[in-house]
Image (cartoon, rainbow, N blue to C red; front, top):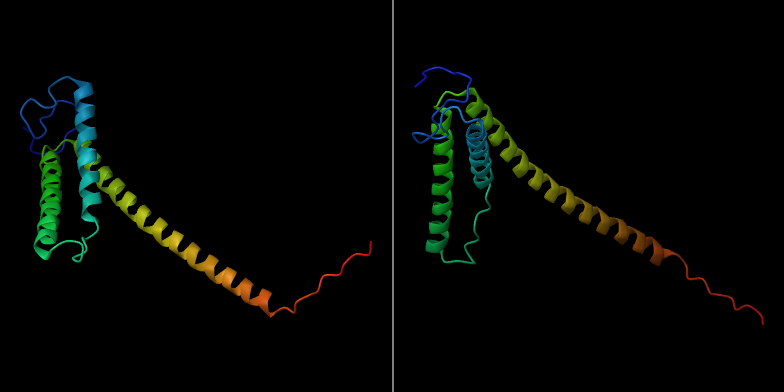
Amino acid sequence: MHMSFFWGKDVIILFPGWPGTGRLGMYILSLATVFLLAVAAEILSAAPKLKPRSLSPAVGALAQAAVYAFRMGLAYLVMLSVMSYNIGVFVAAVVGHGGGRFIVRYRELTAVARANVVKYKSLFFKHMNRNWEAQPKRRLRRSPR
């Protein structure tokens, strides 16, 4: 077991024999797994809180505690993976956390942008309607036949 960072595909991550020695495909699969664990941990860190009016307080608190415990379990699995001191695993974890944070912030910012567009469109049309109603009514002339 290494006690400093190293680069290579012969590593033990989380379980003995996984991903195995000399198997590049399993090493890549383990990097993808660490990446997805990190993304899931970040996405769950921004999970919306349950509304107390939809559930009883005890059920809502239990659901939030379960989500928190699951997120912490994922975070500890990522931490233990990084403790293999493999540079590839470390990079996969960092990029996964960054990618997860990007997904969360992108979703938040697009929701805010959509809300602003709706707000400004309604203000625009309200203003246009006010100007339209302020104009004097024109009578249509009938064309002579």
